Amino acid sequence: MGKIRARAIEQSGKGKVVAVFDSMELNDCSCPYSVAPDEYEIIDDPTIDAVFVCTPNYRIVPLCKEALAAGKHVFSEKPPAFNAAEVEAVRALEATSGKKLMYGFNHRHHGSIKKMKEIVDSGEMGKILWLRGRYGKEVGEDYFNGWRADPKLAGGGIMLDQGIHMLDLFLHLAGEFDEIHSLVSSLFWKTEGLEDNVFAIMRNNTSGICASLHSTMTQWRYLFSLEVFLEKGALVLNGLKTSSGVYGDEDLAIKYNSKNREQGQFESEEHIIYHTDTSWVAEVNQFFDAIRKNCQIKLGNSDDALRLMQAMDMIYKNRES
Figure 1: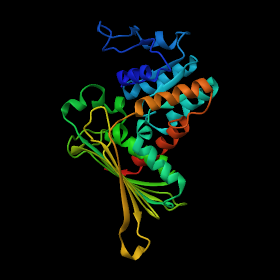
Figure 2: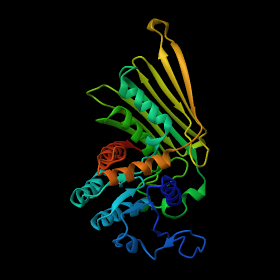
Figure 3: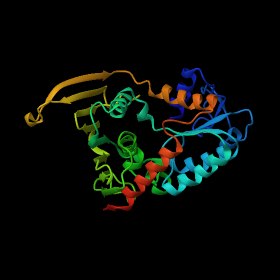
Figure 4: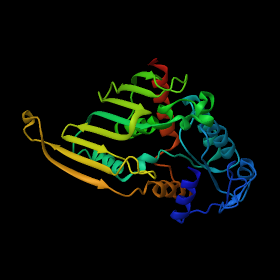
């Protein structure tokens, strides 16, 4: 992720990578950047304006705190923390530092998601009735090498690793959910504290919007599917353009209801295919623009992170193994 972010920074033309720390790069003479001996040489360097935290999960909170305390703007990968209480602690430092803090919920910046958000917010298809999200992949034993094999370092399994993106999109499109129930299983990898499947259902008891989410690492294929059903139609996204390409292109179907609802069918259907992923540069641009213009982070701010981890807490708290 650090390499992906570094490329996006250079491509944006709005920032310059001054130094990196990566324990795997310390003896790599091919690294194009100055390699610091540790994280603190970067955090404590007064000439550096911002840091990108692209580390194993357990290092995210302490590094974000230390960077904010040192007067740095911070961009951090997900998950923002292991729970909502840890996010609150980081937010307290953000407030006193006066610096920008942004989290890498990259999926919000994909072209198809932007289009879905635009349609939902416009009201042209009415209110959201319900959502369904499936996000899955296959993993081998190498997935559990290193820190991912330790719940104390990873914080959780597939839900915290990948399902968190789908949960974030639910909140992004439909708002908060005050009721969440979940079923969590580890039937295949049988690693305590590292779930391989989560089935979650949720509801906002004010709006009535319901949603279901399945996050899995035993899909035996790569799958991304997000469906949003509204009063006047549906938005169905299959595929997600990623650097690996394993999820395919983004195929967004926009379906409009028949005027005669008794027919039980769609009147028209439009497909938009997104072949190119521009999300990484778009995300970096937002971060740098917020710093230069001293404006609020619109997507992936600490408010978003807190709401997300509050929902994640409910999924883990209400689970039945």
